[in-house]
Image (cartoon, rainbow, N blue to C red):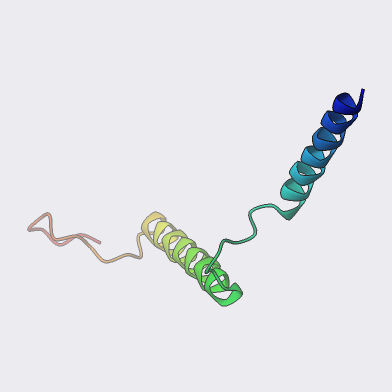
Amino acid sequence: MKRIKLQYKWAAFGWVMVCVGLLAGCSGGPGITAKEIHQRHYRTVHSNWLMFQDDIDSFLLLDRPSRLTPLYTR
């Protein structure tokens, strides 16, 4: 009977640890500071914005003409 109670206690402790782990999430890892995370997010947003601008420029034909043809095109 004592062995079963001990197993239940360990199982309950395990579930508590799993829940704490899930609540903590993957907010960061060892050696990653908040500043580094902010810089990574900034680079991602900046890169996405530049690609978005490039797509809009291509759609509106505002980008530089390519040198693939010897004829001048607009």
